[in-house]
Image (cartoon, rainbow, N blue to C red; front, side, top):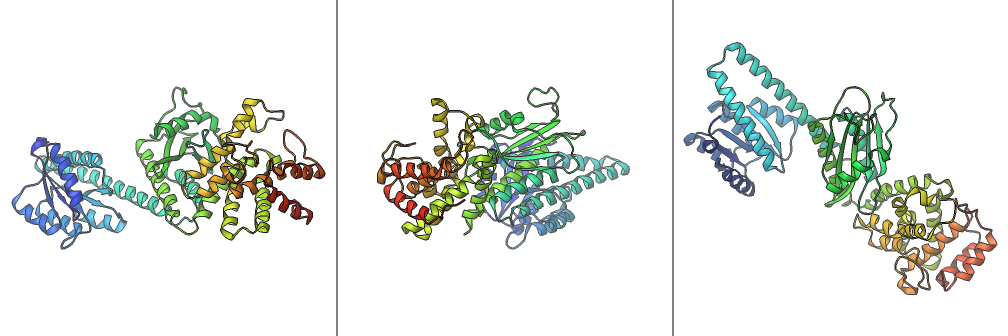
Length: 503
């Protein structure tokens, strides 16, 4: 291979900012760099300069990258051409392959990836030139067959990447994005099982929201606790994990043969982790497969962020969060449908008081998600049949803050976040988390507080049986002015007398 300082690289792109960045980067690494804004300028340079490699964009004025590649091939077919594009398509791939293009780079460009590409294509160029001069016809044919296989493999890879990019564009709900992410992991890798967990600052323990398994796999399913530490490490470090072969069984149980975990970030913050596991056979994950998962999670995150731009954003994100609430309530049959009933009671009270449609919509979201923070509370505390210790009760009280933090991750539900945070405040200031009193407590939170208390008392719980109706009404009446807003109590009792709360 030629001395690195003498290698001359031509970059062709109509975006000056790209030329400035790549030019400065590779000059500092000892390359001789030439730049052109389109194919016509590039050909003029080729008339007077001898170059070793050319990087070109496809869409440019006067002469595009495909026409430039054809001209370079006719001028000197030993010069490797690498195409840079933000919109790869099979049609462009086939056109450029015919014109001698040896590789594709997808924008936005990664300078480190470009440098690796330069090393490879220059090395392959030296081999190519050497074979033209020295090798026998049979060796030349074998090389061409190898290059053909590599090109075929590259076309298949580009087809897969294009498929991944298009898979997430037509999905209309955030929860469906995570389900598709798990399903696609099974499709593009040899994984027997794929799962997506929500993990962030608010949810300290990985919570499974989507999963997929290979139809033919009859292996025992993995449990979250078996991989919890690795998932949390990936979320904390924000770095993908690959265990190609689980030989020593130090980090994973023996039934998991190969394992990958890739973080998913939304707006710069960790939202969750995608995992993939091989449970049978001889298949192992590779760095290339992990790259596919990283590409998929990036596109999934981008799809979720784009959904936030649509008018149905509430429905999209609400569906994903509601799935968490339903999964949480499914663990305890006594509290199943609790959030739904609380919401219906709260909305009825708010409507009678005269709240407008916007306030009713806010209460609908906050009511359904008011207990979502219990995801961050250990099951042994939530499902304890006996009386909680003081320490355990302090942990339970954290759920309102955890829930507010979960909803706050999206950055769109500020009012709903405040209601969730303060639905356990008391009118006399003795509630939690902030000890607010009277008008300091958001009005809709005062409504939700009473609705939550009524439903809790009127249904069996793991630590006690439901209370008699007369006692419930008495407790609420006596709570006016200390526990509850007197006006909310008045309206509740009016609606209760009309038998509107029969569930």
